[in-house]
Length: 259
Image 1 (cartoon, one colour):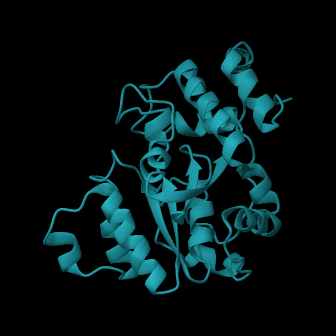
Image 2 (tube, rainbow, N blue to C red):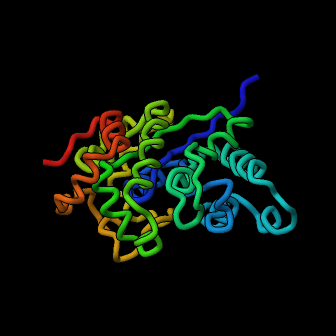
């Protein structure tokens, strides 16, 4: 007898995960939990999101007994099923492939997928962004600035890219240029119904984690548009070009070097 399916959307920091999650989560009958990880429940608790965002759980189901991580996901999925809703989990893959500053030694594997695969049939999809643009954005984050070097970033990025080859993936740049067909492709891969109303509803959806502040160009936007690439210093560009993890990753994901 096969397990029930569960859907996981994976991305690294500053790859457009908040935007795409807002879009997916705005579709009819979707329950999206955001940045969930077995090691990250103190920061992003799935039970609290299910109760606070979607009213799926009663206070007693959260407060009156200890619930393990897998049991919590099973409980949430059961409530979703009873209400004819589909659960999608956006994982916190930053812990798995970058780590800083929360973990110093990432495991370079999708731990959420491994933990849940014993109880569910996993349907997974990745979201990626060009590594140079992602680095320029990630390195500016206050909690990462000065704590992560390019080589460590690219090692994690390459491992994540290899995982995306096995799960399937969408490129953030493609999504911002053609959000509707890209969302249709995402829905096909995750085996969920496509809701065309997402294009007018996504900006109202606040049930998501990530950078929702005024410092994020995409967080408060009302339209999905492509962002211009920040200028890349030649010395910095040379560091990317000389890095074998960078070269392998862009080949895997179909990216090219900036002009």
